[in-house]
Image (cartoon, rainbow, N blue to C red; front, side, top):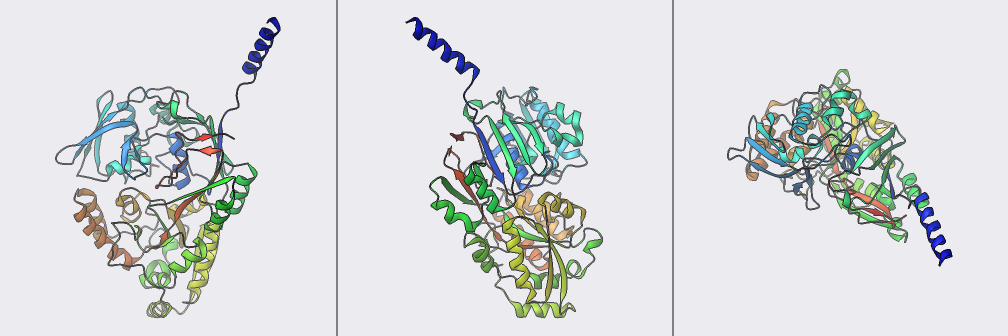
Length: 502
């Protein structure tokens, strides 16, 4: 009995000295995130990181419905100009400061006033936000804005620590402090972003991972190879050409979901000196470029039939798609005719794109297609964050980028195309389009909104500052040790409830 007691004590001592291995999840991202400040950032992968790090006032469900997160309930005034939200109690930020109504006010005001903020146009309808109780806030709007809740389900609604925001200012992204399930540990640009479980998270009992590491790996082949070798647990946005191989691999799981976003090429029509070129100044050339593209062929060649061709910011399956503007068939004869009308038989165009496998392949296909109409396209591959920086600065002629899509149609169009839009990198400005899109924001009647979006789409299809290409699925390859992961329609990787046995 004495020996057994001694052995038991020794085993207990060993267990104390060597605790159970922590559960880590390593996620391979297609790109590196830009600045880790919800007020300033614009990348899709940045939003993936925020999903683990920064809770929002409201979230999106698997059914693409708005559901509670930091706000537990909300209601609109009868005139649609006041939104009152009840906030979750007992929540802390990662720096142990309390989450309350004052923190919400501070964050929203920061989003609306920080010179570097990209959230201004998303919150442009807000006249003021005020704390009406310790855990209650009221948004007063300049005019009714049915899209506000959808905006608060994304970066505009990610509440940050007022203490950290005040201390760091525009440098908040160097050490972001939010109220999500995981807190920031470190970032090495182009290498990794590391988070760890926040023990005081309000829903900590449902967080089963101790550490999350995001690794930017633009090459899809390398991303999948790292997953197979055990260096990753999840690879996001795998190539369509790899889907069959993943499905056939007994150690991996394949999952995908069609998103609400789009693939597009942005034409610099007014963003600085580089807009002063024929493509930027003559819509006939943009129309010709679009007509020279076979969108269905791209779907088959690059995406193996998993994508959908598109010519609008909404997919053809969306109720917001204008059925009177169907996706155009390729028409080289018409493209050449438009080129001739514009005074060109040939035209040199520089097209920048992200240096990942899928985009490179897609751009090479488009390069060959438009050459038949007389466009001599030179491709310039660049790191994704650099690409977005160049877009913002106007240092491009034609730029290829994706938009992940939003639950409300306004999120796919307003900030990209209105005169003061926060992500209007093409610097397109048409007062008629602004009026239509602002009116669509103000109406709670979907039929009225549809009429406005349809009218705007007709103008945009003619002016063509953005050449829409189609809509792709979010596809994932997952190690079998990972359980309870479900791909979300918005493309975000939600980790609450996810486990990793490896």
